[in-house]
Amino acid sequence: MLALKTSPYTENIPARLAEYEKLQSLGLIVRSGDFFPSVHYPPITMYPPLTPEELLATYTPPADHRFDIYAHVPFCRQRCLFCHYPVQLGERSAEKDRYLAALAQEMDIYMERLGYERLKARSILVGGGTPTYLALDQLEHFLQILDRRLDRSECTQYNYDVDPVTLIGTEGNERLKMMRDYGVDRLTIGIQSLNPATLKLMNRHHGPEQALEAIADARKFGFQVNIEFIFGYLGQTLEDWIAVIEQAVGLGVEEIQLYRLKFEAYGDFQGPIKYQREHHPEAVPTVAETLAMKQAAINILNAHGYRENLRRVFSKKPEHYSHYADNQCCGLLDQLGFGLTAFSSLRDRFGLNTQDFAEYYQRIADRRLPLNRGLIRTEEEQIRWAIILPLKNRRVWKNYFRQVTGYALDEVFQPKIHALKTHGLITEDETKIELTPLGAFFADEVAQQFHHPDYMPFPRFAYNDGPLNPYNNTEVFGGNYAG
Ligand SMILES: C[S@@+](CC[C@H](N)C(=O)[O-])C[C@H]1O[C@@H](n2cnc3c(N)ncnc32)[C@H](O)[C@@H]1O
Ligand code: SF4
Image (tube, rainbow, N blue to C red; front, side, top):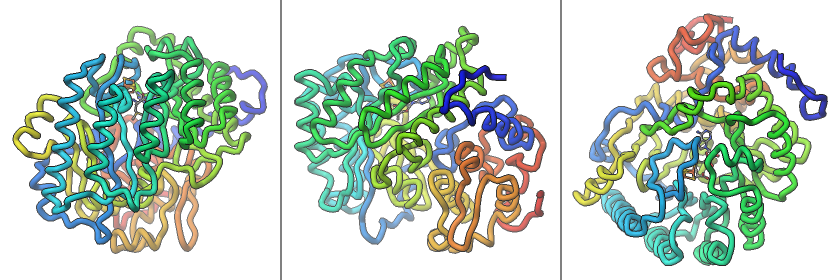
């Protein structure tokens, strides 16, 4: 049993852990307590090979010709120990020039294939890597690359993912000003922790002071600010974590995101954290400690007016969400991604770019799109997708589900929906189904109930053989009530 110091932020933790054990015994959660983030359907790690020609042959752009745009910049100062992204490390100025030129060409090839001279952006997200880890002239060049190719007249949000160090001091502030001048209005800053010992163990290249300075500077330049934290990290205690989140809610940021540490890769590149776990198992918080951290953070955030707006993203005002994420997960709208590892989600199909630098450059040199995996979803896969993403992140509107799939929600997954309602994980009324607070806490596992067995994150035997084992009642139509 987890020993807890009495605090208003820890009172409900024993009850939450009891629910966890019960849901595990019913088969919802794997026996090991491990988790698999539900972000796309099928999961991003499970796509078969696909050529750009196959992806685009039968694709028709949306009627309003608008896309959410993602651009990826895979360069970082040094590797964070928890990171599973393929990135190049260090200054590498010439390599960055080469990459930016290739990215511009990739956008041109895509536009040519789709028949556009410019892309009408609904929202823009620039991620990495560290897309601000560019010299000032390079950053300006990159902003111009995007500016020339994107029509921003109907763009509702322009977000940059950044690390704190690139924003501070004279040069950092020049970057902030430059991004504002080019229309960037929102920053997602990877803070990860405000505890100096944890930051050190993460191999981050900054301490808490620089992180706080970066947040203050970003706010000074008028950005909407979203900050990200990781919990369940090596050496982290519940007390340390509570202190970090208590500090975070006092910073005046619009949005706070929580990530549970993921040890296994969710792409081709396995980061060093898995080996750290093998060598220092004593430093790894238990599953119970990790879930206690999550519950304590939710308690603190709620007590300070931050509500879960999209799953594991907390904001004071409902409008302070990521438009890109909302359009992807709830709107199910068409999105184009450019750069290494980027993906495009195009209504009934998904294309994933290569994770290999050499292949990326070669494809561009051959004037071919660098995507090499993906899927055109069948009707059945489309039905699963149209439940999984909105259910996990917010709610499934019945009208919209019918519009997207052609089926009534009442016609599909009846035994599943019945079982999830019976066990208090979802609620249903005439207009929607949505997660209860308990379901929201275990949102990944509830979402995975709707996976096809071929795309399940763990094998059947990893779960208890109870009524919520996700391998029960996996058919979309028909099936028996398992109770
Ligand atoms: C798409 S990543 C972008 C990383 C970005 N370069 C940074 O460090 O700020 C977004 C966030 O995912 C989280 N993250 C990255 N690796 C993780 C892991 N192994 N487990 C859990 N969260 C992780 C971090 O909070 C990170 O800021
Ligand atoms: S976590 Fe972010 S900053 Fe750290 S190495 Fe990975 S991509 Fe770079």
